[in-house]
Amino acid sequence: MYQNYKNVELVKPSGLDLKDRLVGVQRVTKVTKGGRAFGFSAIVVVGDENGVVGHGLGKSKEVADAISKAVEDAKKNLVRIPLNKGTLPHEQKGKYGGARVYIQPASHGTGVIAGGALRAVLEAVGVHDVLSKSQGSSNPHNVVKATFDALLQLRDAKTVAAQRGVSLEKVFKG
Image (cartoon, rainbow, N blue to C red; front, side, top):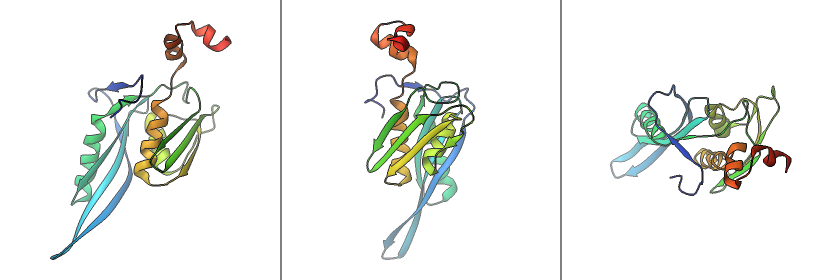
């Protein structure tokens, strides 16, 4: 799922205090000769609010079952996101399908300036101060995936220094 990203650290769910956030529930209708068959799909984001986050999709005839399936799915693909004192290391753009997101670090006390699906993901990661903008499609599926695209491209200063083979000081001072 995360093959396109260089430094993605997958995390095992055991031993983590994960909190799940319901992003959205859709009711889908299949019309058959016997009438309408209703089903539900749920998107859930789980995170420990300390840099670990995952998202999942569950489908079922019942809402509760769809949500529990989504939580199980989300726990299967947890990743670690580099954070810097409650905000992000740098600004980043992400896209998936028609959804575009832009996230930018903010000074302490700003809060999470984000809406809808974007807010759910950022809060689950544990970001306390961030500026963001969701553009294009507002479809929660694609907004969540676009947010993950942006978050997975983030690199902290230590990673940058290691990749370039220079000291931390050289990364900041040039």
